[in-house]
Image (tube, rainbow, N blue to C red; front, side, top):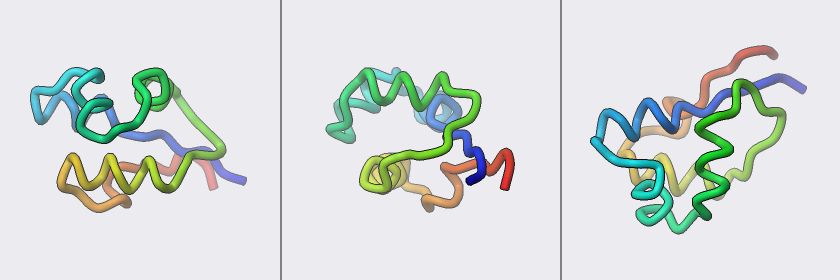
Length: 70
């Protein structure tokens, strides 16, 4: 398994949103958004959450995910 990093904070900043606003716009729990935003590398992530965040940011899922290690 590889490691990925989600670019949540980066896209939230581009939109001028707080992480709480990302949570409200996506219906993803705030604690989950904070975990995604602060993690330097994760092995697993909820695909539904990725889809919701990508839709909210108006980007492709591939743009939200940064592959750190394959």
